[in-house]
Image (tube, rainbow, N blue to C red; front, side, top):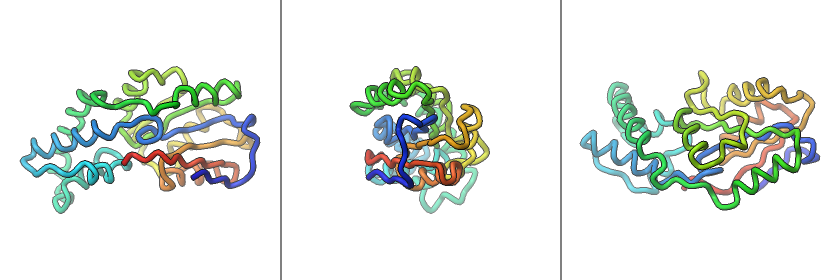
Length: 208
């Protein structure tokens, strides 16, 4: 579903910020396999694919905490699991991950149709694998910046990341801006950061 907060001229867009997982790329299997590898390492039972997929979206620490269920309050245990998860995912992040069909063409069309429009990625996935995946899948040429969940003191839906990208790209306070997000919760970051000038396009391609 596409939601417009106000009418806008697409040619006036100065900045488009994309989420990564479930918006530009299908990373579901690699995340599921990495979580279950972590649970096996920790001598915990594996979880169904659908369950793990439903846990994705708020960053790796939250993902591991959710996977550990009732043990999520054990900070040392979560940190241990997170360390293993990040190590495993670092080696297996591109086993099955792919770009959604039509994404390169769409990015080229957005950028090519408006020479003044800049594109960026703001994900809750850690920044190192985010950037590595974007580059490995041939998307790096489209973006002026790629930020992850550990790039700032807060994660989405907090507006800090979006505000930082606005400042770095020099987007005019009066210019129309769009943020394409996987879900309304993430899009709220842009709504807060961009105030009344934002146009939010919610992608219907979910991680699950």
